[in-house]
Length: 622
Image (cartoon, rainbow, N blue to C red; front, side):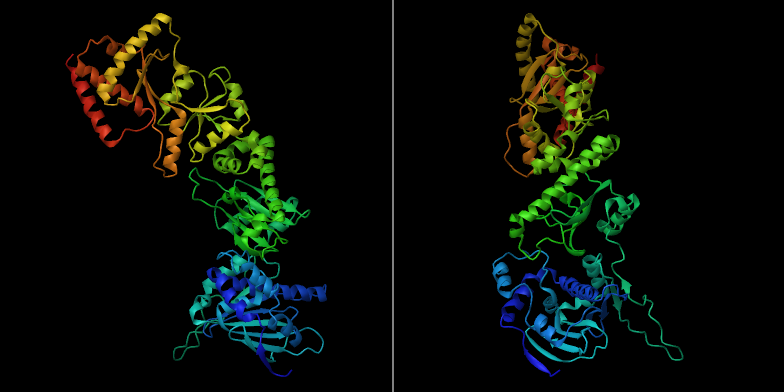
């Protein structure tokens, strides 16, 4: 061919700066584009020669000494005319459309970057060379060189076998891509599951020989290293996969020694093409800052992690792979948010996860209960984020009791019917600290459920409004004392009102808390002198304010319920002791009641210990 020079296209001056600008944060994507092009070339050659047995491969070679990273394939190759068409005319998805779609978008708005292809090389290279030979009869090799992606030179090449070499001379600012570990990491991330074998080779410099010795061989392994050695398990039919294969794939892909709890295999060809595997890892209560890892692929080519526009947000707590070959990836995130196809994909994924949960609950409830402690934050979060998901799984939601039982809401309400008055669920968010209050419910044979996860404060409020149970309420074990009170006669009530006023004066003086509400009641457990209750909704609001770092909160309403059946309280009422002693006892009763719900603060502990010592002195003198 005749040597040729020229400019690639009238649009290149506009396009090249945009490519560099939009992909600045993830320049390593050029490696995926180069390898993908090689795989495409091999796929095309296979179509022209079906059944041909060749050692199909794309080889990435690093020569740090020369400052070069090259990509070689034995695919279809190109003629001079094809180089002119596919390289010189920048034939990717319309230059004008590209400019129109992305020029005003926010940085990072492009998903996947497919279609940028060959020209992504100029993000990291100050010179790019193509050596290619077409498999067409009579074809001659072609060499193409450019230093900026705009001006080029074409001449006869030197390649002797069908295929293409793309050699990138890495620029001084991007020397990071001459690091072996860096290139290998990028290759494994983007190309680890490609259908065509991808190899990584490193040109190693031999150590100079000492006098009288042969040249020392490098200790590093020699020969190309297969990058995509882990099979894409999601492409197999679920019936052909074993439990051990699922677990091994999980360990290999996510680099963990732990096994998943269980998994969901997605496999559908119509009305859209979607395959993947979602794993349920062990979760912790504090998962607010935690995010799983769901890898999005397009035709076995890695695109990105955790694309929230495709994968429902609440599923981001899971780990897995999703492959959507038909997904329109060369678009902005705002387009994906409003795309009907994407919404169908998201709805399907949600439904399959819900089907897995309900299936486990209905057929393997014992196992489902074993998983519940790990998965309940995820399930509850999903219910609050997605109404359709909630409708599908609401009958599988479990409540673990302090006795270790797992009950559905209906099972709890049925089991405790008539004991609480109305549709009420009693819970504790700190079984250890609130053990005294829990014991009181145990004595009444009333189940107490444990709601100690970070998400539970929001979840129980959500259930009160969304469960579809009229009058459903959740109350913490210290929310009221009605369950533990004895019936009082009219005369007793009248006397109680008078005594209550006396006790309120004593408590307000002894504690210095004029806002404290004091009630006198006859409790069933005579050994308990007092209990502190707190209004449920106000406490919830205050706790939620603290969680979200807000200063505003409602005044917390506490009520000290004194037990008229207890000897200590009766002595306070009788007024036999002197005022100082009565104040000591009253303040001590208040602190003891408070300690059953929350710990005392530093200065309160000091006062409690000092008061305890004084009371011991008084007792010793009797």
